[in-house]
Image (spheres, rainbow, N blue to C red):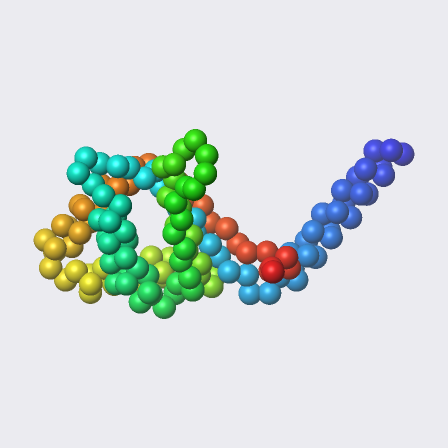
Length: 143
């Protein structure tokens, strides 16, 4: 009898959680990339911030598929090398559309192949390993 009660409780809980999920309205999708931020010799925060600002102005802010993008660096704790980029898009399909549009915008912002390579060489020296995750917003608990 106890096992039956537990099974019924789990079934009701799963059904209820499915109902909550079904009530989600227009949940955004978030691509979260966590980079290991490096400090190469001869580098500076000013240079890094300048390169990041160029990316934001030339690419992110011009990408119609990106609703918002937030960049964060580690503030407290033993590992200060985390650099997190959270990109919000409307739907899972827009993840690929946003990425394709980024490639187009990069070509528009840096039409000269050598200048584009120079920019990416300068910017990429700050990044080590990374991880990518894709999340969906739970609008039922949105503030």
